Image (spheres, rainbow, N blue to C red):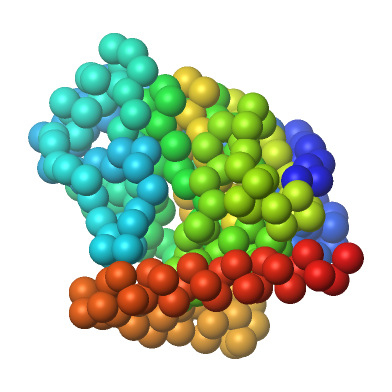
Length: 290
């Protein structure tokens, strides 16, 4: 893999952001954006336990999905407060994602500001919280609705691996899914290039996010995240400006996902083998272009 560091700035003008990152779909870390929010200092484990500790949430382990797994299926359920207590106590390979904590504690929306000075189109009903114990992993994927994301890390450190959407075949994307056949866990120490050789050609970025860092992930960007320390982050989503981008996201969210879920229920093994054959054929084509 050919990896570059993600650009970092303390602050940025809308013109600079649009010309150098938004329009050309290049990731960026803004280190000063969240420091202006009350949540930057207020949000911690105990604050959330007090606010929504009794809420039941889905938790996810580090196991990659198989032939039978519909997208976003939880591996278990527990009270949010109990989960956060376990996260505080030490390494825990469980995470929570796409948790709309603001539905349960609407007052939390006063703790941050929508950064509309940078871009428009934010989906304000769905600010989402992501929590992970030390050692937990979010496997390589792209967001199915094809939105632009501003992902702000609060507590803890997290390693992020990023690739443009167009690198999908080098990454061994499974057709009709947002996931990859290859496993990128601990890619910096080891990666199975023997079985996934096209990944050597993939050009992307990597960065370590710390408290207050806001990562701009352009629409469709692949991302793989590993929690170096227990922590949590918030994602703000913004629809693409153009109609084509919006329709592409709607198709993937409602059409592509529905077809994949149906096939996993009716013919899981055949469907998995069909996709695996397609994955390797597309990767071989990328290698053959050298």
